Length: 357
Image (cartoon, rainbow, N blue to C red; front, side, top):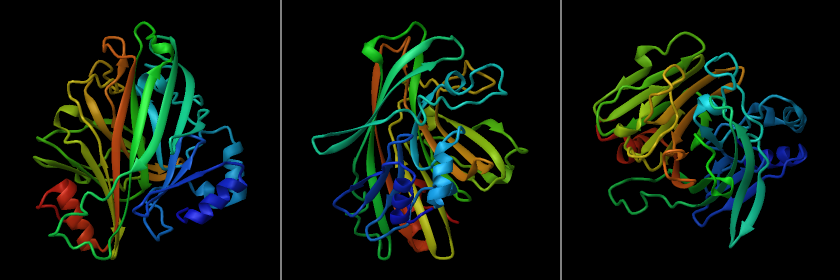
């Protein structure tokens, strides 16, 4: 599902209430409170979504069945989860056989609040942390604002025929009442789902080997991951489900996904803060004492759908951090156009002058 109008019609017909935001540069966002998703990003004059959405949203009938089902409602787009994964999504950890998305988190119970011209999504929730067994009361708030094209003043770039959409996302996390339960640590985890088959571009300050978190079908071929001194490339076209994780100390604060065929290409860039001094609380499933991972990539081509996830974490709050709340600001810059110009944008914003495809 890519068409904005059809997607709005289907969601309303299925009893959901999407919100549409528009900015001065023509960017339009489709926000779905159910799940706290930014479900669609659209450039001026275009109905084509930059993000993946679940094929269940292709018709009212299938969308009704999807939302009525007991399975996880993975509608697509940009969502917010919480880390560490071993505490929030692996309820029997260290037993890895059960993976569960807490319904209080996703889809949650997001309340739409309009204040000073902005739209906020607020979700108050309770989670049980698997390793300690403790219950924690939390509040997550999200809002969205404009993010003008960072290349708009670059005189040496030919952007003719290139369309742009962008937004800023503000996310906060807090323990209810500012009280931190003993031993509890949690961190914000933001994820974008893109059409399957593209390539992740991850700039780094130094050469850094990714950590393989899991694979459900075979291993990731060595040819799919190329590691340079200042750029990691991951071709996300594998069957099954595979996940890589990357160290905060080497991350440059941007990640991109390039996708296309013929002369119709797109580039989605996420610009985010990295603080290697912060307490990144997400950990490998088989080494839960190893911290410091800030970025992840998840390739999915399975019963869950066919999409590629670009993920980043925010340093955690709670025990040992001195923090009971945190705030995050990140931007998304999305481009669509001829291959040569999309590659030129990728070189300027992410990959460096030597980047080729």
